[in-house]
Length: 131
Image 1 (cartoon, rainbow, N blue to C red):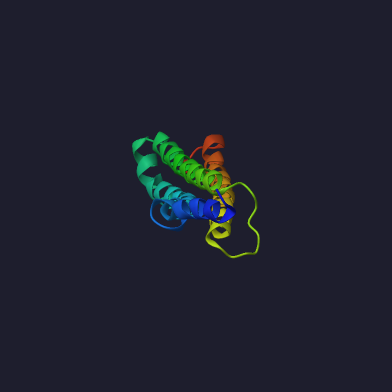
Image 2: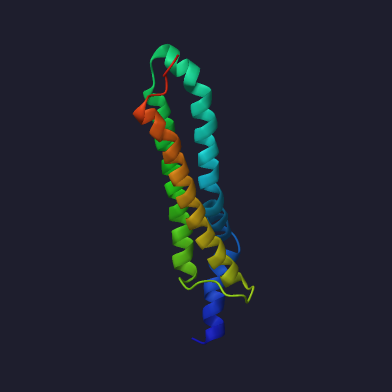
């Protein structure tokens, strides 16, 4: 198989359809999970503290962490499919896919840590302090 045919085989899965959806999922799922956790957990605090269901805030965090990990899984799969070299400055579909996959991995890791950081005070002092 020549080099041109190899590039076409590598480009195809990530330049349209499911591959492109997986690339964008790897980039967008973790930030969406972060905002989901932020808004839902914050919105639930009064109700949770009034009714004594503080474990629900931790449950929301676990769901958000799982979504963030799923975004990293998608990005990792894309990076493995397109090749694990770093993107260069050619500007073709393979390099764009590599860049998006690595960006998805980095964003997923950062938002995973951010979600975890939002939950740590709940573990230490609880969600219902002063209520």
